Length: 138
Image (cartoon, rainbow, N blue to C red; front, side, top):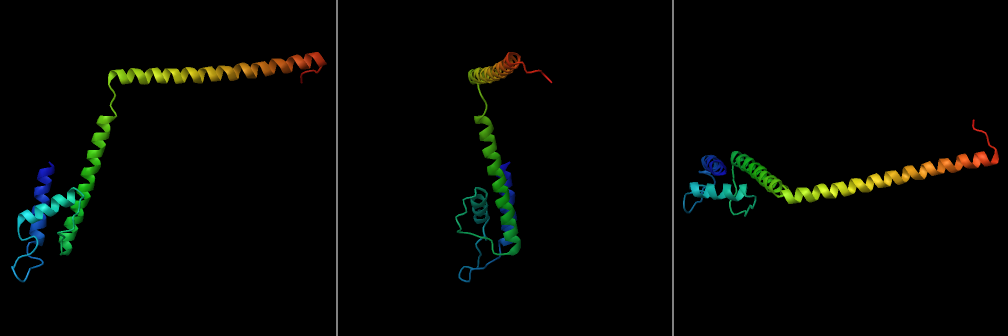
């Protein structure tokens, strides 16, 4: 797909830029050959951008900007695919993750139980003090 995209984009750039600008000595422009246009598209899509070739016409610049956005999109898709493949866990890693999650949940439950017991003890102590000193409940 990327190869077809490069071929189509380079042909479009070649059609737009093939006559401009004309070199007075050789009578040809930067994009007078298809391989030069293909080189420019490959450099632009890969987001390297050597700067040795650039479009001169407004339509050529628009085509080059679209090619740059396509290259940016392709780079983002490639990064996302690599990230998705790296984030997949095998069965041993999944078991370790479940054990770590269980340990974390156990600690959270223990902390909640400690807080519950602490508050219960405070209430019992307050009730005992009220009974001891004869304070009536409202």
